[in-house]
Structure formats: structure tokens, C-alpha cells
Image (spheres, rainbow, N blue to C red):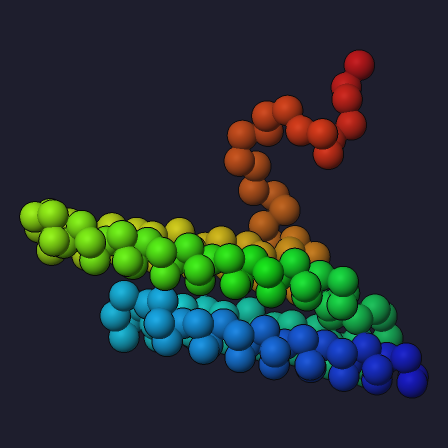
Length: 151
């Protein structure tokens, strides 16, 4: 029982830390308030599911809802994504001075934000849920050093 409780506490720290990191970054990254709310609600739902799995693990046994070794790669991913968003925002701001119409820049901002949000959700799934929901996605199946060779 003690081990399950410690796993639960680790999961709580990871969920709240991840949520804080994401919500603080979302203040700057979202192109408008509606997209900010969509991103925040989506991530809050995923983190809520993680908390429910953690509670299930404490009450009914089983492993931790999150492996602590997955948190650092997720945090690095979030930081890199927000740095890239910052750089893209500066580039799009400069592009406005080059005579590119504002409506085109707004479309680009929305598309970039949607792709980033999808990437974050995939990382959340892989970090907290072990890839349970995105593991069936196959993006090409090209050669990989991580897959065993078929003979």
C-alpha cells in the first residue's frame, strides 16, 4: 500500500508540474483566446485521466500512472516547442513587414499552433499513458533503427 501511495504522490507532482508548464506556455503560444482555451481544456482532460489512473492504482493496485523517467523528455519537448513557437512568431512578425497579407499570417499561426498542440498531446500520451492512445498511429512505417529487422 505504501508503494502505491508514493507512486500516486509522484504522479501528482508530475501532473501538476506538467500542467503548470503547459498552461504558462499557452499564455504566449496561442494565437487567440479561443485556441488558448481549446488547448488548455484538452490538456486538462488528459491530465485528469492520468489522475484517475493514479487513483485507480492506489485503490486497486497496479503500477504508477506515470514513469518518472518520462517527465524529463516531455519537459524538454515542451521547452523546445515553445522556443520554436517564439522564433516562428518573430519570423511571422517580420514577414508582416515584407508585405505578406495579415490574413495569410493568421492562417499560418493557426496551422502551426494546431500541429504543436497535436504534438504535445502525442507526447502527453506517450509520457503519462504509455502511448495507449497514439500507439496505433502509423506515420509511414519507414526504416528505423528502433525496429527489429524482418528476415
